Length: 473
Image: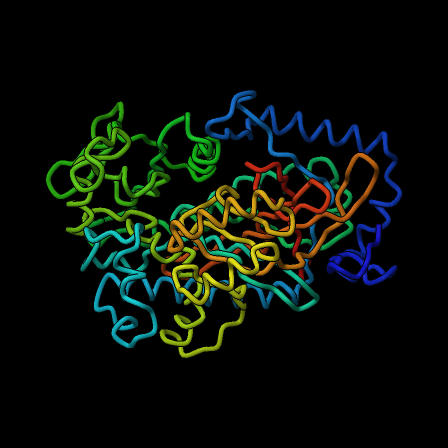
């Protein structure tokens, strides 16, 4: 189960088990292969029965694919989590301050800390939002921070997700299934709970109700519909929070408010947790051909009649070119040094950076500025000469569309594989809630690259998920 020194193994230092994993080492070592196989089948049956599936656009085959679930949990010590929590909350505060600034006075740009063209010519920047100050000044209400680890105390932020970060249903269901299958593990180990997330999410959304709201806020989740790859999550969250799941045609604008059609007549909606992209929110403001949004919704938003979470235009804060400036945002807005480091990043739009990237493509990871899901990227060390040459042509053609980063030695966590137990690379996405208060449950979604040696953890690229434990104090 131990491995060489090239990657940090989160469970082992040599042959010694690290403290956070002491409570599960015997459980994993002594589990018979037949029992493990039985439990794995049981987990898959539970996922299928509950309906935790996803679709990959443009692919044939099973439209309701299961994300592979690995039963070997990832474990953090309480002190490790404290540092992560401080860094994540700090980052969420800075990103929201940045959004309030660039849709307002633009002080950080006037100060020369971020180039104006990177913001105002950004595809994710929405001019229609200029001058609008949402309730409590919060623009990004659910911030998903993707983290990787390279050593005992070395954590890096890989990217920020300020629009509609997905995957929290897996965090919750992974825990539920582990507790159901291995109750004795939770009796023997003091593991911090994550079950409070839905209540905290509802509380966060209610806390940012608009000023015109009188009484208990009505919250609804706006989904593109059941053909969306994350529809399970939309319906799961609506059900567990006890709020309505709506599609565009279920809502309409009248007067200064947004209303929901119900069997008992129209009901006013105060907070919309939207799971659709900016372009589709309102056909009168954005894409005129959108059938997913609500005509006139932006007028109501502008007048303070409804809160949209996260705010339209929040995506400019999680653009991969803007990412490089987040440490500067923390210093500029908060007057603090960043708790969590960025991965060193080259912006291919800069001639000197582009030259370096082209000269070193075989050693770098190159990503599309607006890309996601592991698509449109090059992992240099795992690519052929032909693939590298083809990608170099793409870079020369549109350098502004790419950033590059070194290939990090991502940490590994023991994982159940066909041959037994083997190390596999992981990342982590915690979900930070921003409203009247900033809340973070102790855990997140650990994604694991199930293919040996692979660094790509995305489910759309064959990755799986694990339960994430934080040991209680």
